[in-house]
Image (cartoon, rainbow, N blue to C red; front, side, top):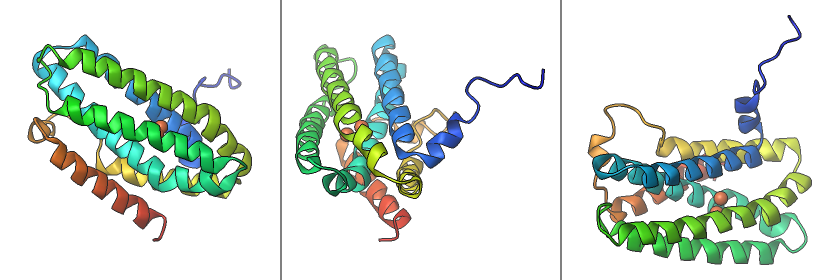
Length: 195
Ligand SMILES: [Fe+2]
Ligand SMILES: [Fe+2]
């Protein structure tokens, strides 16, 4: 009996210690939020979309501040890998901006969302394959943990898991506030890294 262990015990701990585990969990959260936006309508869809926008903003900002700068110098070919990832992130942000101008009930919303989803998914897959694997191989335990700490600091700026009662003020948030959110995430990351 004592040998029975919870199958996923320690997963949260892994995220605290390992930037790659943490970012891959966020990739999973992003996928789930796309599912939620697609599966809902009306106010629920609006709310799920706001959470998706927030998580994408925080996630990509944190990657640009923490992971890409490391990858650029951390392994052979890193410079080109990061250049490719930044081009994908720029394209996704442009689609996101176009999407943010539409109401979630607009008939043009869903085709744009599916385009964004495809872009974001291909980007995440490329990061996992060409960047994260090398980061894990070329970083020591302390490096993985300190990068995880910085990503967590960014995540704390924009909680994306539902907290009843706090959503109303964030509804109908335009891209202006999203840009401000990216700035706050950037500040949080820099502070966590002691810059
Ligand atoms: Fe990214
Ligand atoms: Fe990512």
